[in-house]
Image (cartoon, rainbow, N blue to C red; front, top):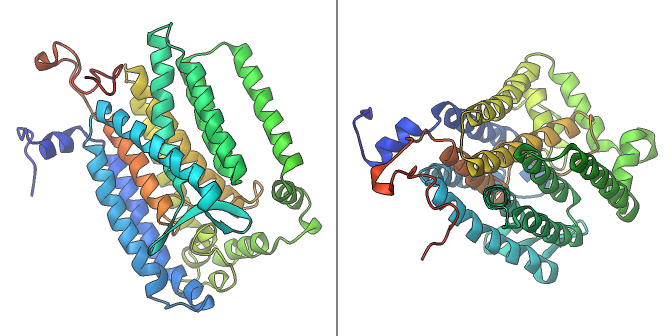
Length: 390
């Protein structure tokens, strides 16, 4: 049913203020993810001895449906409530991430998951969107109030999270979180000397990761010299792109999903390439680029620093995760186990992405300049300096 512009209900105000093009693009990714699960999950489930239709497909339908609901509900929030929810989410996810070090399930040498009835929870996934919003607020408050050490607190917070992720270890997640925070610091305005020092620090962390973590060193060496180790997944991935051609072999006709262990998750992009072709892959790439570029363009009109920094962090995180997944599938960067947003199979990943994109839609909604009931302040941004006012 059409919603009138004169509708002043919560749903009516949301519909005419939310970025409907970005929402449509995100829903398109969810739909593509559903199609890919139809294609990839039967072969994967059969290989591990599970029910071909129930194991992955039913769960992904549940996760995707819940993700859409979560994204829409979160997008109804004002920036003030986005901040409150992000603070609570960051505290909860931080505590659960610490819990994984003592009570987590170890998979492939890493403790990143907590076993729950019917699913495994990866708390660090929920840290990413919540931390981006909280760090954006800290930096913005430091700019508004010079006596408030927002930037220092942001570095301390990210440093604490980095320590926990290193202990798991999850170097890829650590790299994404650090990159998002540094992007927010850069957008907030900073002396170029500090930018150079930050770049040197990142290079130092990369060297340390290469030196201290054998799996990081192995992946980089295999990337630089494919003959130095096992590159079975990358070799099969590249063959899938070649076999697919422009238009693909057809739905269900791919072969790479029968041999790749993570064809439904980290390597779902090659499955799409083999069955639906290069043109479909370019469409998927274009949707991700559209979400990021459109979001950044909308932020050029934003006057509230908190909204700009928080939304920038969420967009960088979303785009960087998609880039890492697709680039590693194409052997453009060393392999990293990271899902393709809304397309790959995953419970924690899909729900965390839904929260992050809900935050983004809420922060980028069109807002009126003044509201008498708020004392002349923007009703969506008033009170951000005190997220928990008494």
